[in-house]
Length: 293
Image (cartoon, rainbow, N blue to C red; front, side):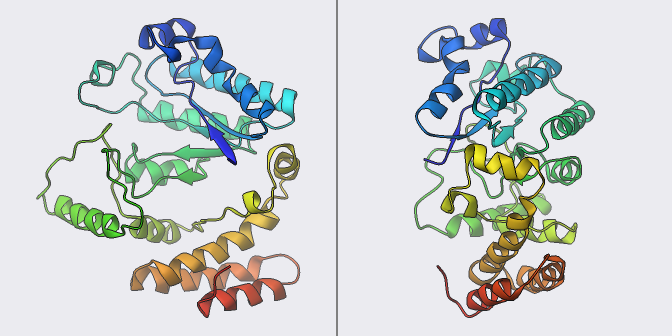
């Protein structure tokens, strides 16, 4: 296990008690201390988050920042990621049908900006609960990771089954023509674009999509990762690796249109890699020749 993720859901004790009246999850302190137990067990990359709407978003934001600072002081490693999902409609879930503390779009954008300024080293995750328009807006305010092609209905992911992407593309096309039947799941999604469409959109907006997991493979985790990230030097790893993983996606999974744009992006971006690019060019050529590690 490389990253251990657990949402506190709400940091407000009374609100937590209200939404978790019984069972193992009802122990507020036990849940709050989970990341300490994860570090002690050797999982030094952790992800925290709050489900926005259970209590005042300003309280949740400050509590997440205090949690992040405490972990950083204690283990020299703040959270690798912070997630900020907003409650969406969910069948048979009264709290989702009547949200106690709804978070307006403007306040949500402000929250993202505050978190990014306060914890610049942390990856901030946005899920498909948010619309494509909100994704585009928040990418410019500090979101660095996002979901794509997600589904929340039970059994929707099948190992080795690539038909899901085809189904999503067809459903998205139907929605654009008004021929759309609502899909049920754990909660409602506002962005059901297939991965290929999201990748194209990111490149069209000037971003470089990355599928990189090299830090895990090289054991750049915990305090070791944070030391690099806080100095701003993680870019020296992330930038070339993002281009290489993007190239793999283009060769193995993308549509012709996305592949065409992606090649332009890779060729333009590789000129901005600092230092010698010989090793990068060699790896890029191997990928384009169909070789994988």
